[in-house]
Structures are given as C-alpha cells and as structure tokens.
Length: 276
Image 1 (cartoon, rainbow, N blue to C red):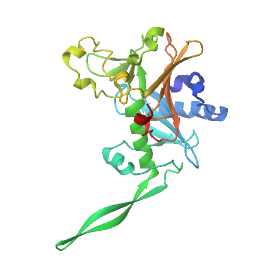
Image 2 (image 1 turned 90 degrees about the horizontal axis):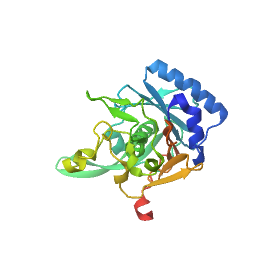
Image 3 (image 1 turned 90 degrees about the vertical axis):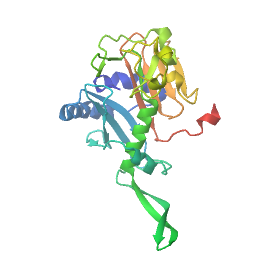
Image 4 (image 1 turned 120 degrees about the horizontal axis):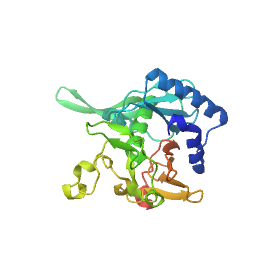
C-alpha cells in the first residue's frame, strides 16, 4: 500500500483484522516520508508486518521510476528506524528452506541446522555432521522475496508499458468496473512475467502489449489458491491468498484505491493442495 494514502489503505484492508495502533500509524506516516526523501525513491510501499515471538518486523519497499525494477526492502522494529535489507539470492533461499517455525523478532538471532557433509581422508570418504548457522535477517530477506514473487498483486491497467520498455504508473487509471473487479483475470502478479513468455502467439493475440505484460492470477497453481469477496455493499473487492495466509489485496471499483498488505507469521501453507 502506498505511503501517500496509508491511512485510507489501512482502513480499506481492516476487514481482515489487519490494523495498526494509532501511535504506529503516526510513526509510519512520518518515517516513510523520510525514507522516501533520504533514499530518493519514486514511491514507497508499506509492505506489511511479519509477526515474531519477541517483536514484529515492519516492512517497507522503495520503488524506482521503472515499477518492475528490483525493489529495495527495509525493515523496522519500531516503525521509526529503518534498516536496508540486502537483495535476495537463490543461495539465500536454499539456505533458509531448512528453517521451519515462527520468526523470533531478533535480526541477529541464529538458527542452527545440522548437515551431513562428505569428508575425504585419503582414499576413504566419511560423512561428518556439521552445524550450520543461519541468521534470521537472511531468512527475512528470503521470505519477503518468496511472498513478493508468489502473491504480490496489482489490478490490470494500474501500470503501463512505455514503447521504450520501462514500466510506469498509469495516471489515467480510474479503477476496474464492478464486473471486471469480480474476475481473477483482472489482477496480475506485481513482478516480472514468468508464464507470459511460454504463451503461444495465438494466446497472445487478444492481449494488449501495453497493459497485459504481467502474469494473470487466474492461471495460478494450485487452482483455488485465491479467495475473492465483495465487501461493504459491493464497494470493495478483497482478495486473500490461501497459499500465504495473511496476504490481503483490496480494490475499490471505479476508484484509484488499491493495494496489498501482508500481516502473518511468514509461513507458507504447504498443505493447501490437500485442502482444496
């Protein structure tokens, strides 16, 4: 959700019980404005909150003029002081995939994992147990990246692709119509396309290259991983992810108000295919 309309956005997303206390809201309003100025971001999004056992991580993301360029991610424990996180890598994801359970809320906390490694002694090969330490900050980077790739959402038409390549915010976007807002095909993954490249020319024939340049939610696997509901007398559309419980996307049809927020434990629902 955009920091410029933070209070309205939090109000629209509050139907899922994802609210903030008045002092946290006031702190965010001030500190995100300073983050935008100091880091010279084009836009700053309040991404959400990852719940820890000792403390919670408040997450914000900075975007450049090209909306699909890699985002800078920051975290805070008090909504006032923000620390920049390093970019996510495949190695980080491999390392942190063995860590299960809740976050602690301490970035310096180290998880211990025992691995079997092969050791050569002359002609003999032994398997030795090695204790590997994984920092919680590394796990935080990896989880945020996974959630972004899987369930960050944007409505069709909110962004447009310029003839020269960069992706810009569509200033003429006035919201989806009520009938369009009820369809999953009207929403895209807010990231570089993956499935679109595999489509045939025939499948791409009906697509508008300036608007349909991202992957649609309707083809997500497993099918049924999104819950779409109308609230407040059909004046608000709410999408909730069942794959990453805690992710809520909202859009008020025929208005420019849309956004998403994640408030959860940072744990993926790996049992979803068996629940559908």
